[in-house]
Image 1 (tube, rainbow, N blue to C red):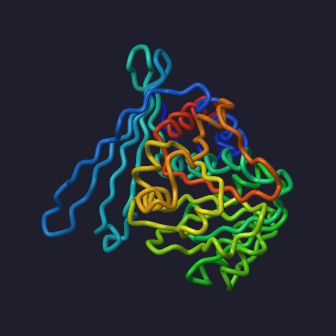
Image 2 (image 1 turned 135 degrees about the vertical axis):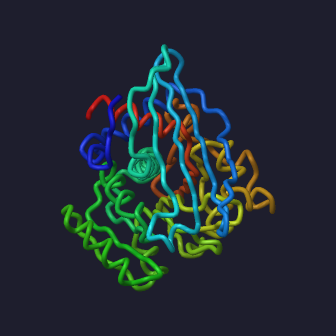
Length: 311
């Protein structure tokens, strides 16, 4: 059985190639059962969570991501979230590869947003705003730059020092990146706004958006989390990665659906629809588009298969 580290994945999963593979696999589809959530008691500490996320393509491959969330790990000097991915042969069930789950997740998440932007962002989008300074932030910038002619990147975060550090990291890649002090002004100047935060209250306001922008919401993964307000949803043509996931798990979609700002029919399509030509993408340069992702095990399987092929 092969073992692929984070460094192996950095070499084997260039952003453009992974976006192309995701497009192929959303077009083809696969079986994605409901993911498992299990609470794991920690004596004397906060309980942890075990997540199991399987997916398979009949006769080809089976994959399962095993992720753990242990809130007390910060005090131990460890990440709260850890993940491992196991790729199996779809005909025999034999184990083929054990893959670093954290790097796999970062890259597939960023590339799913870039895939959506292929259909939804203006072709001439040149200025990207990254809202958030976590581990996903630089991946989002690099992935979007693989699909659109990004010449400038602005980074905003609650901690200016962290925003400056992300910008410095991106400059090392040759991107013209700089931190932003004012979020409203940064939104006004961007063609694509990508958000990867853990915000519970909206950071991006619909009143700030201008015609032609694309808003990419990645961070919120529970109904209590919001990165954009109802006005942003109201003004935009709305798309999601998967209808089942985003409509139930993402506050940026679930809350507007619950309060009547958004109807089911207002969701124009998901990545299955976009890649299969079952819905239109951007309709004109003046439209505001919004994409909300929560992730799907299809993306993990797609990235794992590509990594094993290229490693």
